Image 1 (spheres, one colour):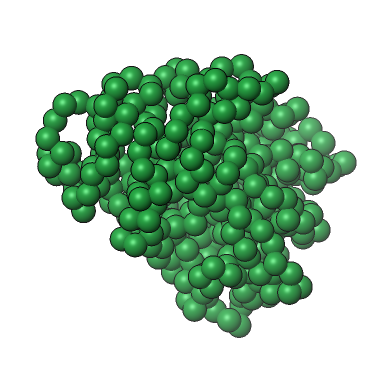
Image 2: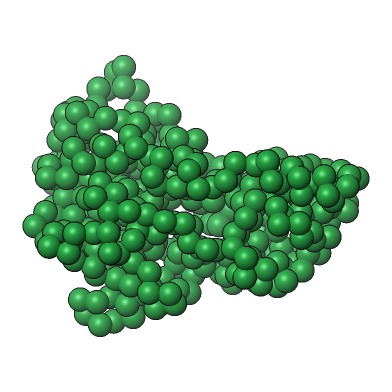
Length: 376
């Protein structure tokens, strides 16, 4: 089925839908990972985005129920060069097309993804519309310009869970707060391993897998959970998750973290890194086209080592906005020298912009979960 991708700057790309008719809009971005499309699709940090894969052949290993990073597909649309319907993998249970159709997500291929990626790199990530309707490309461009900008958009509130849950045996176990209030009695193994409250701004399941693998008991709470409730739970540590959108409008998260700064050790990843930076008085800004892929080089300034990292973010903390007397920069991106990590000099706080839990990606930075455990 023929389709058109129309960008807000007026450029259009011919393509075809392999998931049936539809029309959707959002911010168009690109990901340079060569594998892991299922993890990309289900990462809540991609909410509101039309994701372009730069690797040309997608779908060849199908979809399996084990590699989900959330309970549903999070991308608004999926853009690829060539869809492969004949998948082959011993764990696969369905095709990529069937999975997208089942989740009512538009997927398009036969699009010049190299040209689109080069255009985004030159002009920046922007709003776009994909449509299979036989309409004027100019009209689609006008529709794209009417979409809300990602800057100033709080998407964490749209992807956060509605109920708290435990992470037990690799899956969420919903907590009925009417029967089990969120207080210190929530913990089942408090005396044998560290207890962690994970604040869900759009959390990936592999973060929870890593926390559990590092012998932590985890309870995940919605983003709107207040600081008093978290203190009543009396955890050993607090984790701030990844998530989509602009961090500055997440004022409820920033205020909560400010109230908890000197309460317990805190570890933030991605959006959690940005929220912790804002809570410490820093500033954030929108990157031109963001960092999305599994091969980004980051230098760990404390050791001199270079880590190959998995990344997915469109905003960053301005390094110069953090108080150098209180905060130490620990990681920088070697592609563009943006801030990738910091720690507090007095309080037990650390954060990184990238994804040490990977999925997809390398495992060079898993030591950060051990560092968090050591802080507790």
